[in-house]
Length: 67
Image (cartoon, rainbow, N blue to C red; front, side):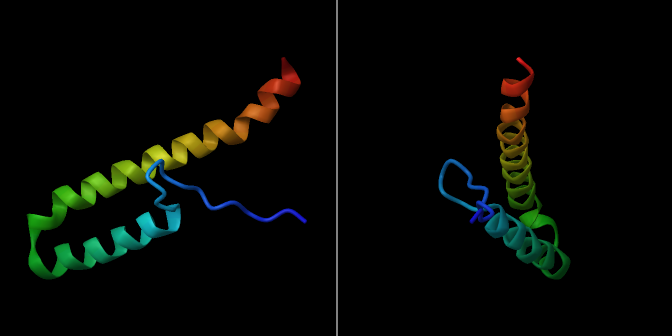
């Protein structure tokens, strides 16, 4: 039976946790102002990197079959 793997950051952080962190930080920025924006930007960057690695990993079988 195939189960969906959780996408993990090299430090062990899941995509789901990064998404939740963005939700929390968005609420903090809305409530307390701009001082949390740099942290939110950092988390967004980590999420983008994680998703890019997942796309690359997901494409590898297709490249192997074509090559």
